[in-house]
Image 1: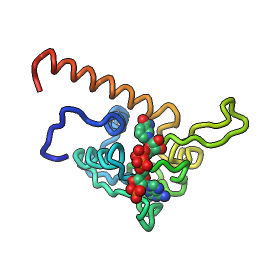
Image 2: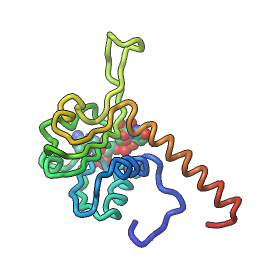
Image 3: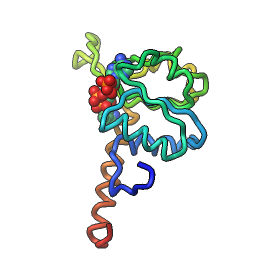
Image 4: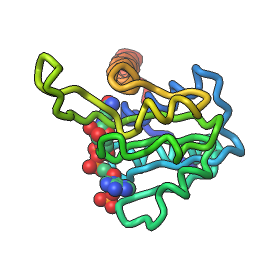
Length: 163
Ligand code: NAP
């Protein structure tokens, strides 16, 4: 939150911001739509985007026109736990899309009988987005990397005796 300096930032939201930062995506003055408002993903990622001076709209299950909100966004973070809900025609051309979702869908052709998909229809969205994260292999590994970073920071603090 603005005006606060947390000891640790939640791993998945932190990973989303790190992906944007390392990809050179400017956030200040941009519009962002966060689909989902959970305490572990949607809410903290919205606060982090706001801290980075984006104008953020949050979408949840009672939002009447989720597609319309997403269509207005330069940056889309999808974290609703609904397989491929965010369609390609929801995405503004040139928008940057971070897909947090991990959903198992039945797939008789797959060895395990299912495959993992995100909350975004990757095939459709990737034709209009400037950049988009895959599922699997996008936010998931970043979450693990941020967990390790938080662990390292925690250890350094303990050894250094700092905050
Ligand atoms: P959650 O606690 O189930 O929250 C889902 C959110 O999406 C809720 O705020 C819900 O709205 C909203 N929502 C559900 N259906 C919707 C709809 N039809 N339209 C608009 N909003 C809708 O889920 P979560 O824990 O935040 O996780 C979200 C997704 O991210 C899941 O697929 C999960 O597996 C994945 N995830 C991935 C990682 C990773 O490392 N990649 C980490 C954590 C989670 P309401 O509040 O109104 O119910």
